Image (tube, rainbow, N blue to C red; front, side, top):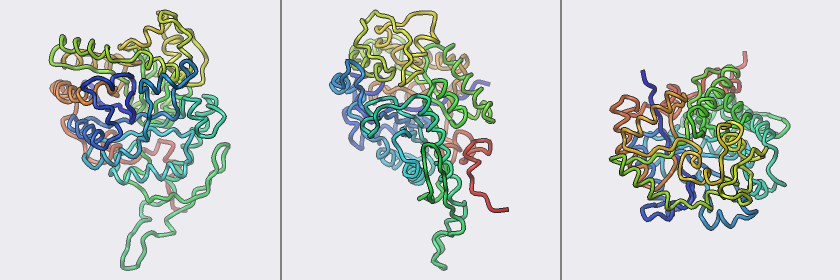
Length: 456
C-alpha cells in the first residue's frame, strides 16, 4: 500500500525566503508579510488543502558573510527584515481549526524557563496545534546581536541543545500533575499545590530551580521538529525529533540521510517510524506541463541571484563573492550549516558544483526536490521521491504568494487524493494526535523520563 504523503507550507516572516527577489513579482503578496491578513489568508488556504502545518522558518541575525557586508541581503530582501514568527500564530489559529503551526526558535539565544512558557501558552491557545522547530543558529551576526563574541562551535551548540531539551522536558512533563488544576469555585482552590513540583537542574550550560509557569497544555511538550542534517544534527534528531526537515537534490542523497536518521532513532531506543521526515520541495504546478514550464521560466526572471548568494554564503559560512560563477565549490569545514557544504562536496562526488549551479532556480539552488509540471506530473515525481528516499512528506517552499500555494491546493491535492495517497479529512485532536494517534509523547521518548510521578 502506498504511503500517505504529508505536506507543510514552508514560510518565513520576511519578504524573501528561499528564493530572494520573488517579492518583486507583480503577483506576489510577500511585501505584506507584516500585516495580519497575509497570515490569515495563508492559513485558510493551507487548511483548505488539508496541509499538516504552516512551517515558519526563522533566523537570528543578518546575512553578512557575502562580501563581508549585510548590504546585499538588506537590499534584496534576502530574509531581511525578519519579523518574529511567534505573534502570527494566534492570528492563524483564530481563523482555522485543524492545521498545525511549526515555529522555529533558536535555543542558543533562549532561556529554557521562558521559552517553555511561550510554547505552553501557544499550545493552549491553538488547542494543541503548536510545534517547535529546534535550531541552534548559523550566523555570527545573530550571536553578536545576542551579546556573544560569535557563533559557538557547531558540535558544542548541539551539546548545549541536549541539555536545553533536558531542562524544558522537566518543565513541560514533570512540573505539574495532570490533575493539578481543579478550578474549584466551592473550595476556592484553583490549583492543588501538592500536585505541582519544582524542577531543579544544574548543568554545564543551564541552571534552573523553578516551577513551570503554565499548567499542562493539550500536548504538554510541543510537537518536535528539527532541521539539522549534519552528523551532530542527525544524532540529535534521532534522539528527540518527531519530524525532521531535510534537504537534498538527489533521491540517493536524501535516502542516505533518511536511513541515517532512522538508524539513530533506533540506536536511541526509539522506533524507526517514530520520526516523520519532510523534504524541502519547490513545486510549480499548473493545468499542463507546458504552462508549468512557462511559469518556471517566468519565476526564474524574478529570482535575485545576488540575494541567493548572500543566503548561500550565510548558510555555508563561505564568502561566495570570492568565487567566479563557474568556479567549483571546495569543501570547507565551516561552523554554520555543515550539511549544505557536505551535500555539494563530500556527499556528491559525482560532479563538481559551481557557484552558478547554486544560484540556478532549480534543484541545487533549492537544496531539495524541484518539480514543475501538471498535477499528474508533479504527483508522479512526489510519489517517486517517497518510494525511493523513504521521506514521509514535503515542506513546500514559498515561491509566489498566494498563487503557488493555491495551485497546490486546487490542482495537486485533488490529484493526490484520487491516487489514495493524501488525506481527505483531518484526523481529530491535537497535532501530535493527528500525526501519530496520541496527543502525548510515547514512553520511549526521552521526555517521558521527566513525567510527573507519584511517590511510591
